[in-house]
Every structure is written in structure tokens, then in C-alpha cells.
Amino acid sequence: MAQNSTTIDPRLYQDQEMKMKAEDNFQNDPVAYSLMVYELDNSWFVKPVSELTESQKKQLLSIENITDKQGQPFNPAVLTNPSEFNLYNYNFARSETQTIGYDLGNGQVLIFYSAEKIRAMYYNSTSKK
Image (cartoon, rainbow, N blue to C red; front, side):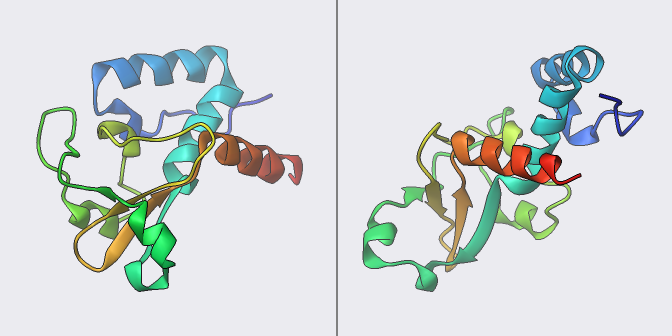
């Protein structure tokens, strides 16, 4: 499978560990690299808390203890430019099988699909090409 890009997505260069993984996948496992980028772009979304059921609202996690790898608190303003948001740069809890939502405290929720769903979405989207 040919690589679609000749450069690595700059969002994957925000820390040394992620940079090394991205470079290795880029060179040796193009599908894994492509999935990493797909996850950056497609594994999350923001919606109004008012659109959730009461049951869903009770399951929301707090954004209070979310920090980036330098220990800086998560600022929901980073979500205003989705092409620059790097979910890998934060300590979000994510699940293999469960969708997880975070109350952003501003009337919005940040929702992450399960890893299982992301892989299914990815393979579905690539099989149509």
C-alpha cells in the first residue's frame, strides 16, 4: 500500500514518544500510521450537553483533571480548530469498547468513540476507496 503523504502529520510531533511511534509506523506500517491520523480527525466530536439523555449526562467525566503532557490544564478552546487538536497530547480516558464523554463545563461535551468503533469506521472508509 503506497503512502498518501510524504510528510508526517505535525500533530504527531508534539512529544518524543509519539514522534517515534509515528515515524516508525510511517516507514514500516502505513496502515497503522493512517489509522493514527484517522483517529486524530475522526475519533471525537463536540455536541451540546442539552442533546444528551439524563442517563448519558450521569456518565460524563469531568474535564478538571485532564492535562497535556506538560501538565497544563486542558483548555476547551483548542477544540475550535479541529485540524490542530491532538487528542494524543492529553490524558483522556478512552475505552476499547465504550464511548466516553467529558463535560467541558461550557454547555458542551467532548465525546470519544471507542477504539473498536474507530477501527470499524476506518476500515469501512478505506474499503470504499
